[in-house]
Length: 248
Image (tube, rainbow, N blue to C red; front, side):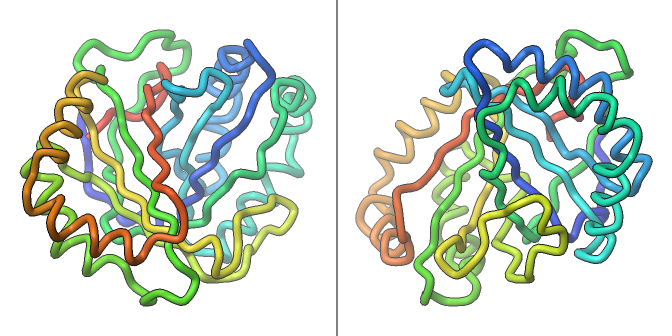
């Protein structure tokens, strides 16, 4: 499966849905069948759909837009359209909460891979692996950009430990252009997020072990990082669904 460079998505939603126990596969079946091509036909781009490895009742996905104006138009067309009208009751019945949504803008854009065709039920052998998303909640009155610290100090130590971010994001400061769908807004919700691919959970854990053994990470970088954090770091260990795009 091929990856292509893209600038399709200047606005990205990171969406985490809390589901009723045992309902995640039901939602994924509905989602992959009904909500993939139909959203993209209206100008949205689905970056990926994932099962959370550590939270069996959480479904995580990312959806991108060219800008805030087109986001409002595309979401309005979808949620007032026939596909959502037909499937919303079935989909909503699986969910407890759907408002854990971060509105982001890319620093390093998520590369788009090919997507398995409709009807796919298994992740292709050549594309197996996990994605780990790491979210740094930032202090409200910190520097407007965290990216320089990340690129100059954090990313090199991650790379030395075998973690290579393929996409990074910072909070989109603009007002939610489609208030019908709530997002986490305001200075207290500022964050920086990065995503990396690993062959499996064991490979990720080896990387974390190497990072913990890194003298520069322990003596210098972690202190600089902690000075910017407003809350504990959030780590999402994610497995792609059968119809998620190819991993970088």
